[in-house]
Length: 205
Length: 205
DNA sequence: CAGCTGATGTTGTGTAAACAACATATGTTG
DNA sequence: CAACATATGTTGTTTACACAACATCAGCTG
Image (cartoon, rainbow over all chains, first blue to last red; front, side, top):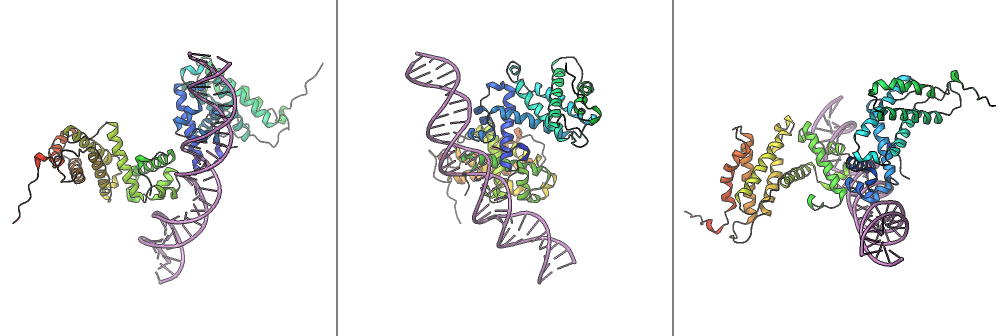
């Protein structure tokens, strides 16, 4: 089982993965994802096909790593670090998601929209958002439920869904305008385990 | 002893050498050649220092390979092939030399001109010119003396010297204007072993 | 002068990449 | 249906790269 991208030190591994991700990025400008074979990718990357399988189980895993890597790089460039429940930090994450997703749609070949491509990047991006949220969530002074993982996952899908709605529906709002609206919806999720908002048990029949 | 650049098939070797040459090219925009250490180059190239010595004996050999590679790439792009004594083919080689040398001077850091840098690229470029000439020289219908190697070397240095004169002395001529003049000087060299121009033995005292 | 510093080459060991060979789907063509 | 083609994974061997350790040599600097 290969190491994750961020904990790799060997320059050969970093280089090979960059080549593969860059190759996929290039090919997706011209073809739809399901028209691209592993062979195509390794040819473009000037990497042996067998080497591909040392790093990724298939092209879906590569796409996943590519999206996650791109998203985290965007966050790093902007010095975005989600630190707890601070609204401005969450806003920065949401804004980054807006920019990344619209960038993602721009860079795609036209034919992409007719394929089963969207679901693939959806899971990749939500995973990336979840990871950022969970890395910055405080564990002290909080109720044990819902678990931080539950909160992070829920919030990440909520954020992605909201951004997708904004990105798809052409309502003409800018990213900066939509962020506060999304924030308003998401903040309660992030604060769910704050003792001040303790959930009352659901009353049953 | 490492293989020459053009006869290498292994992608790892090609990539490593490209990285090293690219690194040297980048560093020379900022520093003079003698301020650059092997360590600097390998750092920039993200290649291990020991690996450098698998390919080049020192940074001078790298510079040599870089210049030769760049020059030959320029010729390939233009489909320049010196085929025998055809004047237009020789003219294309000369024009390429003009362009390459002026490009070379533009890409250099200012401080470069005060260092012992020129002699290094001189021998690299003349070697490259010589190689092009010799690859296209006919061997039939010619006198055995002077040898083709002698002719090629002489012509290559003549061409380089002429181009250097044009490039250094600011006489305001364009490359296209200077080529015919240089051609006029060089053609006799290239035709020296044509039976029609047989050299008479030098009369002595 | 001795001691330090930094660049240079060299060597040996471990690991990743290249490559060929093979087996297995999946699909399409007669 | 059989025959063929194409993409996918897998395996084993060879080769190149990464890295640390070492020795050497110049240029300082007290």
